[in-house]
Image (tube, rainbow, N blue to C red; front, side, top):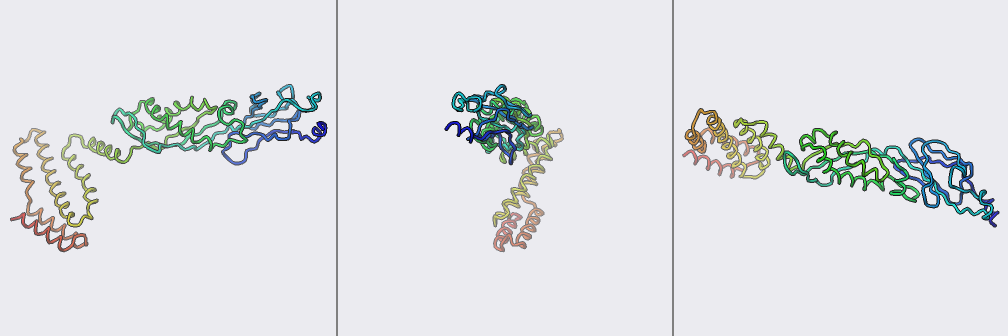
Length: 348
């Protein structure tokens, strides 16, 4: 019976792997019902490596090339070698192929802002995203730590773990770079280098080599970005108070526009904006004169008091604006009349 089983046995003459599709890191050669022929051939292509696992232990690792398999070069005994055991070999060997080419365009990003210490702003929360590439550098380690005895191991099964390592080490990378946020956003290459340095030993523990990590964007949450924009704007005007008031007025205009659908509140906002601009200009002029030594606090106070009144020309200008709003249908006739009455009373 054992002799008949041997005669029917299939022998493998060539062991090779031609990758089909993308994203497979490890693949086990199908050995069910077959044995490796003594003197057979192992073909390992460029961008591949192969390992022999004999009795559960890695016996040998093969790089790219063509190898003739014999009992002298491999711990594999064929049926022909074991005739005294009724052709039943006590050795069971498996062959695993590994793709060593780069697995490119692996995405990473912060799903939520992360908090870091910053030299300029103290503690800030930032977002970042980019991509990276990696390859298998140590197939034996990757086999024992990650892929194991599975028939195949795809990149998709490893993505979550690697992305987690990237996110976990962003804070350390920023601290290691020594760059404040503003320089960090402007020098993303340096940030990427610092992050790669942090990740390299962690990837190596899995038998992997990280390559070509990129940082495509570093940004603050919207509310912090607005604060940064204001800080930048104030830095641009410096000690020029007139420019500072102009900057503040420019900041107020969008807020006024956002409230333009508020019915009768429009006229009040228009008046408030006009009075605020006039008051701001007077304050800026007098404060600047005071800083230059060309005036005293009393004239500045008098000017502010004068600005708090309503001049006839300001009232007429406001009425014209209200008339335009009524003509466009934004104000009703009743709203226009009410505001007109309020304005005329101020002239008495």
